[in-house]
Image (cartoon, rainbow, N blue to C red; front, side, top):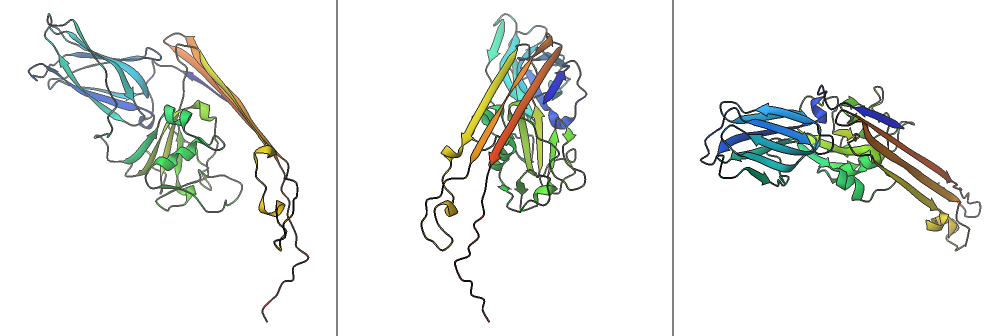
Length: 322
């Protein structure tokens, strides 16, 4: 079970868990505007960040938690310019072109922004797996880390498990799965001895995560292979929760080979091995104090009962050469 409290007024976060927004403020003749005030407001928590454009008209708002934001730019003698919804994804640098009209022509200009297909501010080979993809893509066992396979250069690890400690199950560029670095909200989530994944949590608690295969910056480190950078959800000003339950038993299983054939190939009709699996849980988040403090809780449980049998063949002769 995971319980988190969020304090939006604090910004001492690790850079690997945030996004940056930059822009240039100009007038209709493309002349730069110094001293323009740009306010970035979260649509979920009303968290606000403010920046002022410099002498070159440039403005920068670094280290913003991923999410949807409303951006408003204003300057003396000019009409306000508003971007109603700007999506900031994990590890991204979003650049906006802000054009202010002279006051009196229009009171306010409202613009809808589409997310860019290519992030020109980064050279790293990376993929951000969004909340929509986590919610809608099919997955077996609700192991959300497996969505990393949509990143170029990432493959499923085929090496047999060494010991009881599980790995991420991913091979980056042919490297072993124990050479990866899995982080959660900026903190390492790896076993220091064998390099396995220390703990996992419910897929419902994941906001999005970033998969970096090559050329990632030194801030991530601790990996000779790839990096999986996970950010969890937080509460908002609206109470919201979800619940889920999955059930499976042997009625959904096909018979295994030795339930249909003897070792010598003779057809039989043996009953299927018993199997039963249930997976259930949910999340709940909301405000403790509106616009200031939030809570978020997550719970998930997996129960499985499976039986396997081994057939020892004592009828087929074994011929040993020599």
